[in-house]
Image (cartoon, rainbow, N blue to C red; front, side):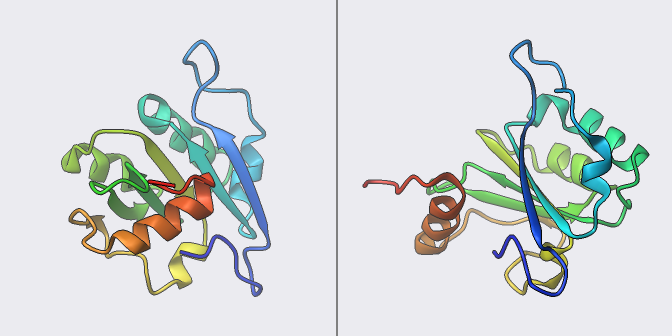
Length: 143
């Protein structure tokens, strides 16, 4: 899953899903509305609806692609694909557990590897999970 592409997504930003108190962190919300940016949000499970609301209020289009990866790099990895307006509902319906990584941006509209909207089954291709997780986390399972 590419996080950038030369024709549009030229900037990658990493943010935390909550601060040390568990509250939504203070962020430059207009940065999330930049169509040339891809955003990775780490561990936002409890604050995701508030996060999405603030990003949309700052100008992020409702139709912006969003990918949720639950249990990245693990054999029970699941991917939920949606948009800024659907991802919270899809996560609630899919009820995945474990660590959550959210990826936001136009880069995910252009990749062929993103699953159709909704919840994927646990990925049968562990090497794909390994590649994605290693790219994002820098950790190689079993390594």
